[in-house]
Image 1: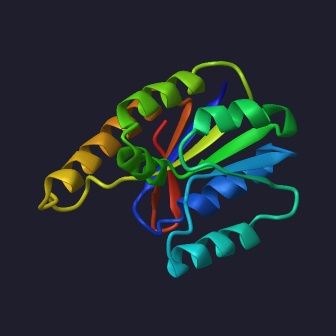
Image 2: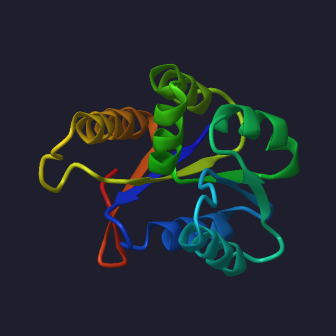
Length: 167
């Protein structure tokens, strides 16, 4: 399985780059969307992202079981975009399934199947969070991102809307 990791800060162009990357490589792309419309702003953001993708995209809304979603849908597409891992991490953390979930995710990315483009936020470049939950999230995100980068054949860092190829 070919894995590409796209990381960067908020609003750095990660999703756009991942979408364009997939559209250049996959005739039948699928998006595994981990966001949940828990408020009006997030619902609008989800709708905007959906409108940016064309009708040739398959959208799979899966807040927790990324590996299962890819396994179930792999015959319907020839490549996945997972957008985004840090929202998934938040979902898994609140569900109490984070450590096992990261292990399962990484294991699923080392198997066979269609290529995968992972979108993730870098949350460790700012100040140290003031509370234990936020520090745990930051640390888990850093560990998850490192593990995904270690198995990815391509790694991109988004800065100001431009991709910098790291690997």
